[in-house]
Length: 534
Image (cartoon, rainbow, N blue to C red; front, top):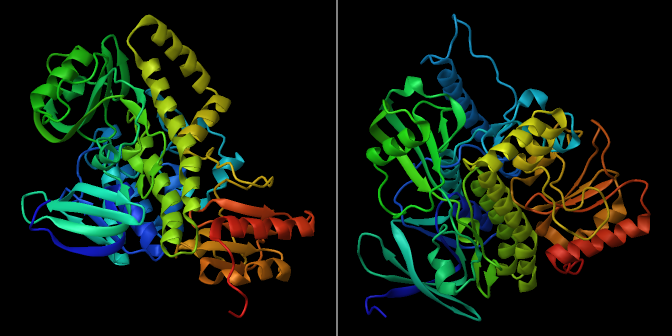
């Protein structure tokens, strides 16, 4: 061990990795009252081109933390760029007229674009999210920037240019060793917990010995924003060819190629203009395309793996550290944000001594099935995109299915994440689902009551007996009595800090069962109540 180690610093949680997932987790931990240090190798927000959109659960998470105006503003800027590109004019106007609002963003599956015009937006799963359901086109770089600003506001100790070099995990805590990336004295941090949010090649996962089974890569993909000549010969959007797949747009200079020739020889090598140009020429068959400048670029594969468990003692994983897959559909960012949202409040409660460590077992139980679904969802797209007769026949069949209103609605539900539900105790239709964004009598919405990251008991029937059950939970559970005049609503709703409905009851439900169910749910998620008057 280095003799120049600084004195240990006691913190509740060390988060390795300061990308969107690590920052989201740190923000949730701070809202829950935990002391947290984030160590991140990069010295600034990562500007590498990555996911171009967020799904509905991610938009809901930001909405419930007061960030909806900020992400809506980012979406508008993105839409302006997309509209300008699609019109082929820098100003984005046509004959002096302002750009028209496009149909609702619907996404794609294996490069098959979904039409917002065919989407059944009256489906209850889409109206469930309220205003958050209208936000999707938010690039990953902007998500990271917003979360970095949020983390600073909350007092997160974010240490950039610092990397985790090792750790020792014991029964009562974790000793974490870090070092400046450019050289300098090592430092030891003594923490209660360590969370690896350090990406698909996670150092934390490897050192902790997590099993990481899955399937090997079959493709080499490139995504970049470039300056090029000959771009006028490229078709816009997704295009399947005899040698692979390419994408041009939806913003100026953005290209993506997929070749089914196995994994790249060196994932770590810088992506050059020559490499991008060669791939684009091979896939398109066009030899007059010349890439003259690379603004941002990344190389990817369809390596699909998932940790068997997201926790090993006092070490946990979230985001790409827990699961990797191809980037098609932008599922990785959203999956990781969901991990952070689920884990943050639980780990903070354990840190504060308000919940037993066993609460953390529900993290893997709830998030692992969704991660497994994402791996299969992305694998299916790879199977559909292969440049061979059987896959192309399947592509035609799926395209026809997705061209129907029912098919579009089904696929958009999957892509948008509105289908997601945790397997929680209780038979009410809302239990385990994201809480509906109810409009309340005073003009507020349910999301407005969750900015502080606390659980919420919403009493919509002025039921003193239900409120009495929650009396001993103090600041752990916020109790609000109001009405919901806009439409049908349950009589009561218990919402966890992550926005998941833990308990709900209707006015017609048996009263004794409702009270008993609420008491059981409160105890399960928030521990024992404090003695009244104690």
